[in-house]
Image 1 (cartoon, rainbow, N blue to C red):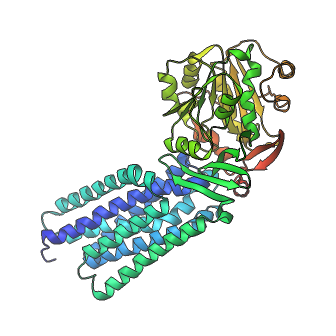
Image 2: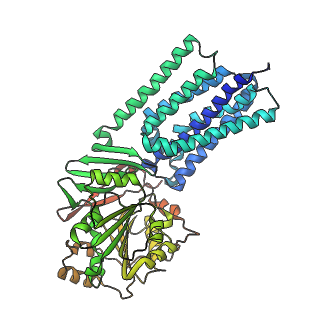
Image 3: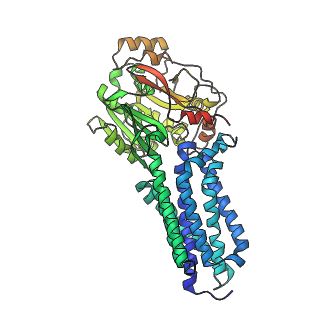
Length: 537
C-alpha cells in the first residue's frame, strides 16, 4: 500500500474517535430507552453491555478480515453514513423494536436481549469496522504502533462519549434530540473523512441522509407526545440523570411517572387529597405510637410528588424532612404538584442512606418511599442500613417501608427478604397489603422499637378513639402476621441479591389501589396490560 500522509491518517483517527463517542453515547442512551419497558435492573444493563460488546467484537473481527482489501476512506465514510441512518431507524421504530421482546419466550430475566440487539446491534456492529479499517490505512510506523494509536483514539472517544452523554446531554436534552446529535455527528464526520466520497453526488446522498434522520426524529417526537400513545396529556417530560420523568394529566388527576411507572398522583382541584390508596397507610404509625402527639419529626426517604409529606404538613404539628436523590423530581414536585416551602417542610437533595448517616436529627418516624417495582437501591435494603435507621430513631420510633411486591407466592421474595432483614434489627414487624389480589402491589411494612406486639383489635380501637385526620379502619383490616421468611436471605451490604429477588416480579401485573373520596378501587397502572402480557416467561 502506498504511503499515507499524517493529514490523511488524521481523517481515519477522526472516524475512530467519532465511532467511540457514538458507540458509548448510544450505550448509555440504551439504558434510558429500554428502562420504561424492561426496567434498569442488573439483567437489563447486563443485556445492554453484552449486546454492545458482542456487536463490536463481531465488527472488529469481520472488519479486520476485510481491511486489507476493502479499507478506504470512502468505505469509512459509508460506514458512518449507514450507522447514522440506523440511528434514524431507532428513533422512528424504537417502540416497535422494543415490543419484539415479547416475540421469543426467553423469560423476563432475558427479555431485554432481543430488543436491545435489534435496536443497537446493527449500528454498533458497523462502527466496529472502523478501527481495523483505520489501522490498515496507516502505514506510517509499525503495525503495532498504528493499532495502538487507533485503540487509544477510540478509547478517548469512548471516554468523551461517556462523560458528555452522562453529564451534559442527558440532563439537558430529550433522548430523540441526543440521537439526532449522534446521527448528525457521524454524517458530518463522513464529509470530512473522505474527500473522494464527497463528490457532488455523494453530498446529495449525505444531505438526504441527514434530512431523513432529522425527519425521523421529528416524527418520533410527534408520535410520542400524543395523548393516545401515553394515556393522557403530557404536561412535562424529560430524562434526568437517574430516570425518565413524565407528568401527565388525565381528567382531574395529575400523575408523576418515573421510568414509565406511576409514582405519585394528585387531584388538581384538591392537591392534598390522596389519589392512590397506599398513601393513606402512611398515617398508620400514628396508631402504632403510644402517644401520637410525640411524633414531632418525620423523615421521608424518597419524594416523588410529595403526597405524604404535603398531607403530614397539613394534618400534623410535625417537622417533615424529605430527602430525594433526583433534583429534577424536587423541581417538578414544586412546579406541578403544589409543593410549597414552609417552616415545617425541609427538602434535601441527596442519597437517602448518606443523609441518614450524616444527619444530626433524631426522628420519631422514618418513611422509606424510595423503592420501585423493578429498581431498588440495594443499599437501602440491608441490615446495616436498617441498623442505621434504628440508631436515628427516638426511643419509641417507627420505621415505615413502602415495598412493591406480591404479598405471597413467587413474586413475594423481595417482601419476605425485607421482613427477614428487618427482623434482625427491630423487635416487631407488621405488614399491610394494599390490594385483596395477589398481584404485585404496594405492601406496607412497619417496624417498631417497641417490643410489645400490637394487635389488629388494638389498632381498630385506637382508630375509633384518635383523630389522626383520616379513617384507617379499612387499611387496618389488611393487617397480616403470616409472612414466611425461612427460604429468603437476610440482606447485608456484602450480599444483597436484590435483582434476583425482584426477578420473579418482572412481567407480572402491578396494580395500585385508587381511592375516591375514601372508597378504594383496584386500578391497574397505565402499563399493566403490558406487564400482564409479559407474565412469566
